[in-house]
Amino acid sequence: MATTQTDQQGRASRPAGSQTLARGLRMLELAAQAPVPPTIAELAAGLDVHRSIAYRILRTLEDHGYLRRDDAGRVHPAPALAVLARRVEQDLQAAALPELTAVSSELGMSAFVVVWDAGECTTLVTVEPPRGNLVTQRPGTRHPLDRGAPGLAIASVLEAAERETAAADGVPESVFVDADATLTRGFAVSNDEVITGVSSVAVPLRLPGQLPAALAVVYATREADVERLGGRLADGARRIAGALGHAAP
Image (cartoon, rainbow, N blue to C red; front, side):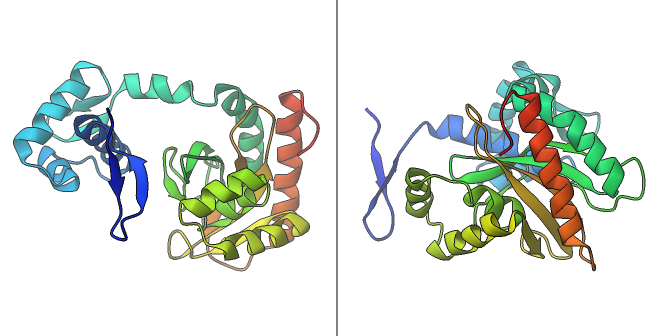
């Protein structure tokens, strides 16, 4: 039977799960999100475990094709992980890809779709412009709902029960005040919230049968016509909705 953990104030939190599984999943995250492929020692440090434990977890993930080591001993995501990723919100990815390509090419910025699940915003798919891009958003990148334009865009279309869940996860009420303003405006803007020197514009993308999502662009912070960016993204969201057989969000 699963046990229930409590926080420092003694409140009940989520049930405790498998420590080994949690470490394996965390290792996948560390390997996928690291700007430079990590070593086993670096993974062990990230997991706060002895190197021998990290090695056993890595061997298991290698055996299943989710991670691999290069000749220098650095750890990379492996093909089996990509296969799993392609099946996540597969319809949304397929519908969004042509529009992301068009937006990225027209605006000269990385265009991406973010989904909200399990209390976090996760980048689902990204398209980079053919040239001149200095900022990107890697698939699998995660951030809290209350940080960044995509989070605000998603928060603006959450239903009451979803807002309650987000609040229980620690999202401050002020986020939903800002989100309501975003819904009125039609798009969200953030500057230096997730990464210093980086700005983003996003619009909500809420479709039946799909996770709450946002369509966004990211760029080095500078003067930008955010009304133009927001309008182009809103057009893109409508086209994605249409490709999935739904009315405009």
